[in-house]
Length: 229
Length: 402
Image (cartoon, rainbow over the protein chains, first blue to last red):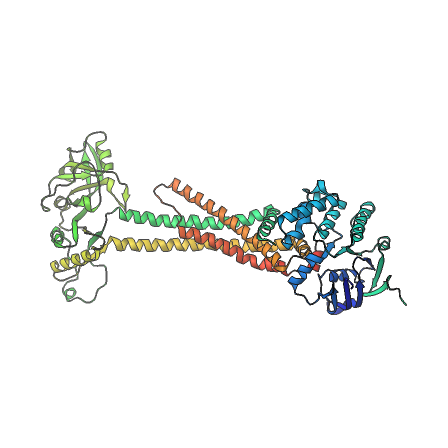
């Protein structure tokens, strides 16, 4: 059974009088543990797809099954719960809370989920060690380098042990060297079993993935798993 | 999210923007402090006036010549409308009233008192021996007026503490002969210093037998008759008896006004209580303003932290979680402001008490509780709208505004 099963997804935005079909008739299945790169020009709908996969947005029509369960009809609170437990986000601009330390930022999803303090502390300590951030635990984001910030963000995205990681241009704000480090980190997480979906402009980054999706005008133009007829 | 985490998160968020937080806390503090200080002033005024009245004597029924109230038609009014004067004989007749414990006639005039070449103007009160108890005076030296025939004006006088000091200085006053108006009187006593009591400064008073005062001022009328009822409960009865006796003596005409200290006190109490409520209410407006400021600050916070709210949603925060976090922050701003304002107000009231020791400027409990409660409620109430706005933000749009 596929982890993600999209069928007949339409997402329409109204810009003034005109309608923009950000996603049009999208059918897609992604299995557990896959490493998928979503590519395409600006406005091709790849960000909309990512938001939809992350339950931040709802399709106008179509169904989205996550682990076999139709999540499009869930209430906002139920969707929040799914985000909390099954989905991890990694953003281009890191999105760390500036007033919180690295450790507090990593612990944020667990705090929101209401996990006991003891377990939170244990998991944060483990994550800090795994991501090479032991000596940065009490640093605030503005005291961290770009690479460290993204590592904190990835630690935060994985702390709830989600089924999938959604990364939107994870290296966009990093230089090549730290960008490579971050990609290696994400790939090692994927190797450990987490489904990894990366949205990127960068063809060299996209080519690293085992499966490439190329989008154009809200449609899948190319899927390396199902090459065109 | 657990309650403790929500509170900690809200606290960190508030302290993360110190200026914004300090300003809204200050506004709330000023509002609460205004209520505390102004009600302290109002209630202080009430206590002061009530205290002054109480020092006049207890359970007093005061008889004034002339009628001030409007009554129904009285056949006697058709014959004469000129009120009869109050006389010593009237006062003496009132000793028959069963509910009256004691009474003192009072004739008042201004005259000069001189001793040893020093001369000054003084208020002269003509009364009887019972005046001492009726007015709750204390003697510092000597004795009070002799308890003899009210129509016999013995040439003796009791003087106030300030008069004694100014006329006699370091000399012994009791036993000296002084001149009051055109009479030579012997000083037989000195009153203990009490300070001003409702315009009549007892420290500058000369008390002589009522007959002597009337002879001095060439008049046989009384200014007041002070009747002390047997108890607080006996005041209405005493009032009725006094009215009845005087009506009989004045040919059936009710031409005197009888006021009770209780009613005067109650009136002042009510009046100044209402005043306190009014100034408290005006001050409470500043609390509402502070509440609006808290709302404004929270709206700014929501706008400033839109990206953060989007992130929290992406990380799995339910709408309720975000709403509670922002509500907790608003409540915290109000609570800290209210507490700071309470302390500030108490310091203000304390300063007033230090500056004016006679003025008991204590804020009433109800005002303090009402101010704190209003602060918290307005803070929460005005926090609801921004918190809901935060909770309803679209996560995709919120995340883009980073």
